[in-house]
Image (cartoon, rainbow, N blue to C red; front, side):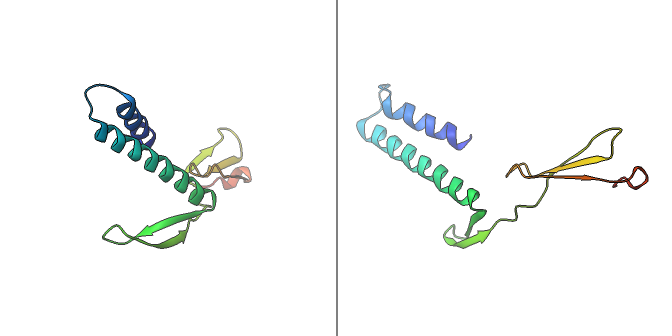
Length: 105
């Protein structure tokens, strides 16, 4: 389940009248709000190229910079001397070319 789906589920439980007790609806509403906050915090850290570092008990140890020039997707244009490297997390791209006899491996 994606976090956005969890938020939607929590809101649905919070507003539905399917026999859920008032306490359960309040708890789900609180969970939805916490999940939305987590989404915003993650977005902030990603936009600043940072990530939280956790210890083995799950407590936050600190903040670590994220390497942003890691390209995890590669596209070599057929019959051309152009190669596109892409970071699918950040959208960053690097375009390179070579002489016909020096195509990268």
